[in-house]
Length: 449
Ligand code: COA
View 1 (cartoon, protein in one colour):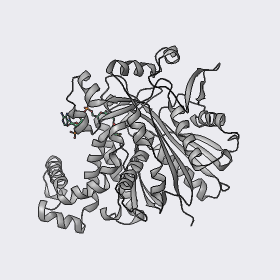
View 2 (tube, helix red, strand yellow):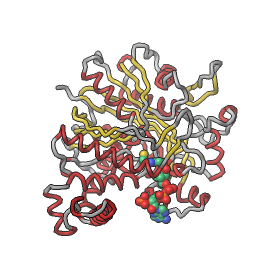
View 3 (cartoon, protein in one colour):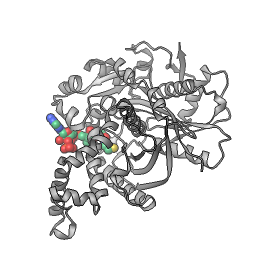
View 4 (cartoon, protein in one colour):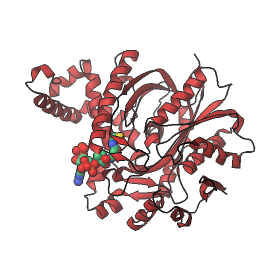
C-alpha cells in the first residue's frame, strides 16, 4: 500500500504577544507561577488588528506552496479546520483560496474545498479526510492542503483568558510523504458532552474544570479503542506522544494518566512496583473515594520515579516547547505539538527515521482520537525549513492596555468600524491582510508586498 501522510508543514503565529507572567498576571492580581508553572504557559500569540483566521491560514498555505514549488493545479483539496469561523455558510477555505489566487497565476477552481467543525479535533479530522481521499484513489495524483486556523479568544475575565492563542498550521497531505506516514489504525473515544461550546456566539461558554475531566475520560477511551486494533500499547513503542495541548499543564495530567493506564499489568509496572508498589485495584477498597485517593497517591509517586521522568522528558516535554510561548491554537494545537517535538529532536540531532509517534487529538463536545505515525527518512530537512522560533521572537510585546484594545478590536460584538479604523502594531510585509467589508458583509483581503 502506498504511504500517505504529512509531506510538509508551515506555521504562522499571530504577530502580537501577551506575556502572561510579566503583563497579564500582575493586571489580574495573580501569582505568575499560576501561568508559568501551573498552566505551563509563558505567553499567548495574539492577532494584530489586520490578522484573522483567513490571513493566518492563507499566509501559512502560501508559504507552504511557495517553499514546495507547488502551483494551484497540484492541489485537489483545500480543507480548513476552525472553531473561530465568522460565516455559517461560506467556508473559510474559499476565502483562503481567494487570497491565494491573488498571488498565483492560476486558480483552484477544480479543487474541492470545505470546512470541518468539531472543536479542536477537526484539524485531525481534516487530515483524515485528505488521507481517505488519497487512499480512495480520487486525488488524480494531486495533494491536499489542510489548514488548521484559529483565534482562540475568550471573553475578558473568563478563566480561559489565560490560555488564549492565535495561529495557523498548514499541512500538505500527499503520497510518499516527507515527514510522517499515518497509520490506518485509529482509536476513538466520543460522547455527547457539554464542556465547551459556542452556541452561535464568538466567545466560548466553558466549564473549564469539567473540560479537563472530559479530555482525560475521552482520551482514555480512545487509547483503549486504539489498543483493540493495534495490539497492546507499550510506552517504548513510541518515541514521542504529541497530545492536543490547550496548555502544557493539561498534557502533564494526560501523560501521567495515560502512562499509568498503558503500563498496567506490564513488565514496566512490575519494575516500578519495587519502588512505589503495584497500581491500586478497585476491589481492594471499600469506597470509590478511598480508591480515588489511592490512585492519586500512586500517580503522584509514579511521576516522581526516574523511569517516568526519563520517559516524560523524551516523549512529552519536547512536544510542549512551542505551545509554552504561543498558547492554545485550538485545531492547530496537536499539529503544533508534533512539529514542536520534531523540531526539538532535529536540534538535538536525534535520528528519528523509522521511529513512531502516537498522536492524541481531542475536541470538546467531545471526542478524542489516537493514531500512530511513522517518521520517514529525510524528515529533518522539512522540519529545518520551519522559522517558528524567529516568528515567536519577532512578535510585538503588548502592554496590558494595548491587549485590552486589541481584544476589543477582535470582538465581533463591538462596532465593526473599530476593526477598520484600529491602528496596527506591526507593519505587514509579504502577507495577506484584512481589508474591510464588501457589500454583502463579506470580509475582504489583500496581499501586502
Ligand atoms: N504556582 C504554581 N501553580 C499554581 C499557582 C502558583 N502560584 N497558582 C495556581 N497554580 C496551579 C493550580 O494548582 C492548577 O494546577 P492543577 O490543575 O494541577 O491543580 C493550575 O495552576 C491552574 O490553576 P487554576 O486555579 O485551576 O486555574 P483556573 O481556575 O483559573 O482555570 C482552567 C484553569 C484550565 C480551567 C482555565 O484556564 C480554562 O477554563 N481554560 C479553558 C478550557 C480548557 O483549556 N480546557 C482544557 C481541555 S480542552
